[in-house]
Image (cartoon, rainbow, N blue to C red):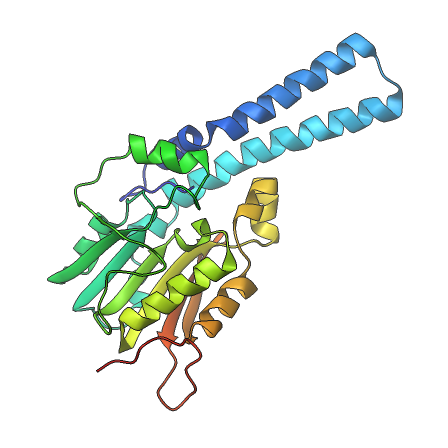
Length: 269
C-alpha cells in the first residue's frame, strides 16, 4: 500500500504509510520485546544470544529504514510534484483514464496536469483478490473529490480505442496473480488508441527496495515481470525512467500495426 501527497511537504506521506501498515510495525516491536525478554530471562548460550540480537536488530533496522525511505519518496522526492510527467507523456492527452485500487490520491493532480474534457477514474478494488488489510484501512481513511467508477479489472467498462493515455500508478501490483495482471493490461490495450500509451509507476523488487523494506519488498514485482506482462499483452516499452531510486516508471505503447499483436484484444475501428 502506498501513500500519496499532492504536494510533498512535512510528514503526511510517511504518516499515511504508518497508519495503513501499522500491523507490520507492531509486529516488529513485539519481536524486539520478545527478544529482550528471552535474553534477560533465559540467558542463552553466546551463539544463540548473538543470533537473537542480530535478528532483532535487522527487524528494527527494516522498520526504521522503511519509514525513512517512505518519507523521502512520498514527502521529499519529485514523485508527487509531477514535473516528471512532461518527460514521459510527450503529447497532452485529449482523453485519459486513471485506474486505482480503492485509494485515489492521484486523479486530482492528474486533472491539474492534463485538464482533458474526457477523463475517467476507475476503481478496480476487489476484496477477494486484494486482501491486504492496509488497502481496507486506506479506503476508510481517505476521501477524494472525484467519485470513481467501480470496474472489473478483467473487463474494463471502456470502449475500444476510447482514450489516449491510461495511468496505472501503484495499482497493478495489487493484482497478485500474473494472469489477472495480464488480463488487465490486455483490457487497457483494447481501450487505447493506436498512438496511446500506458504510464505504469511501481516500486520494483530489486536490491534497493529489499534493503529499504526488507521482506515487504516481496510485495512488489521485478522489472522483468512488468516487461514480460507488457510484452505478452501486446505492448512495447517507449520510455523508462527512475523517478526515485526506489520507484520506476514505464511508458508502454501498443504494438505497432506492422508487428504481430499477441494481446488477443479487439482492434480499433
